[in-house]
Length: 347
Ligand code: 5AD
Image (tube, rainbow, N blue to C red; front, side, top):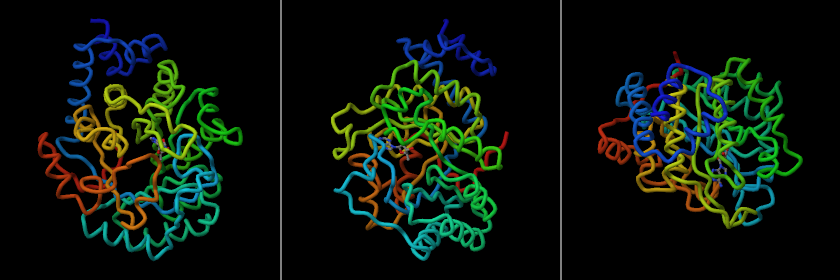
């Protein structure tokens, strides 16, 4: 019963030790894990009912100045054909998305130096004016404090920036030496103090990741108290240094989703595209493990294949904005439905 007891303590808001986290992350205890999942699911239902929020994902640029070893749009990958969306194209995506019922737009992109802060500010301001009832989420990587502030004042509400790993050495296994874990953490604290709803998270099963690393990640997340938490399995991309690494595990991803839900019952936690790519049932399993958000792809169809963070990334069917009906059907198989609300974080 030690597993169940720890789940209860997590639910009560206790701060667990690293060893206790390790047990929750690694113990082979089918009954305990089932109990964890039941608690996670019950907590999500108590707060969100059977509704799953949808966010329209617009991938605004696949140019990136970075060379993260895991990522298919890293600068050094010459195979990918690069694109960046202009203002009108982004607005057309929003128009389409609004018609379909989306009330959150997520602008995600590589760190593209030519998609300047001025440009992003203008995009945000225009969307804010045209869609005053919508939430605007940015996911554009590390920017200056000044840039984050300008985007916020232009009308952005939320920012997604995964810390990827809290461990310094592991961070260096995943990123070249010109990238810094400290800068990533500084960005997160800037975003938080400015008043953004902030999202962070990790890849599950990234090369070199140990249960100790994950324990540190969960402790960090508990401390940061982000409004959104994004985790999904690592999936290899053929044109990266990690081409031959193993994908992350489905069951560990689901277990971590449940731990996050129990730890932060109010958090917005997506069943990610990577999870849906790993397994045909991934999205619904994620929701049953405690996730409550899905982010269908709203990018121009012609460009989707080029936003290839990993191989075989799902961007069609229930992972696409046009596929909302299919998504609804699939959710209804487990008794859930799409919630078209903005779904702002509130305690
Ligand atoms: N597998 C899974 N997730 C990935 N990401 C980037 N590359 C991969 C990959 N190969 C995730 C990172 C990033 C988010 C946008 O996508 O965690 O923060």
